[in-house]
Length: 311
Image 1 (cartoon, rainbow, N blue to C red):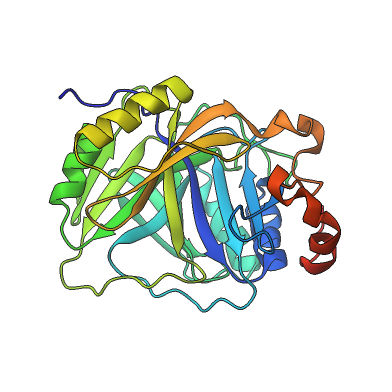
Image 2: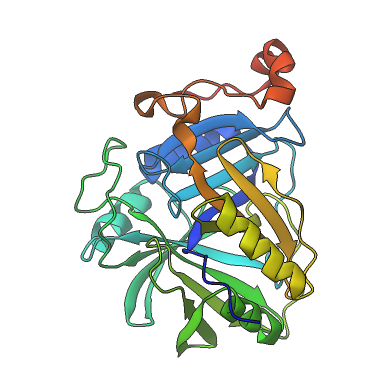
């Protein structure tokens, strides 16, 4: 069977958090991203689903969170996304070192890999992040207090921490990724003609215990396809290869399918359509609480229950 050729890079990364207000402050104030949607978890409407990205929440720019107020910290390990990496302009890292130090961000460490300068840091719940200097033509959101010369452009890559990389590497190749480099125990895969969020780095850690999900853990990583027709092609190809794939699920701002990878990471394939402006105009994205129609009757209760977060 021929490889899938519909994947266009990352769509979004969804993680777990503790405090909604702390999470919101970190992404909108410290990192200067835009909150593009304030809604709730489809399966647990008493929990927010917060989305942060560029001006319109373009695929490849969106970090999303489920904040559970009483959740325990996750335990890093294999079988999960290890680090989510954002792209910043060349020469921007000194600005970010100073900014993150001033904000009291933990885990700051500079290094270089795959010929790129990187700055690693931790999110409020111990989340693994990095900034990479890259030539990236995507437009930045600059109304979050960070200027064009330094602002985040979107995702650059994500790393998968696995006990054995063989089967997942084959899956990525089947999904249209090509192995392009190796460095320090990691293999880099890239999707041709991507949306800017083009890379997946696979780390092999055979002696590390499995991850335990909690605050700071990535719940799933989503890959972008242009539309529902492309998504159905991908779903059929995966199922024909033996993967157990969910039916298509309407997530209001995209359609989604999910499947578990051989290494244990939950993959999603999400459509670029219809986008985050389907229920509020671009100028006011992320301000009002938007509810899936099945939870609309809970609005009064949820507005009293959910932790207040500023616009």
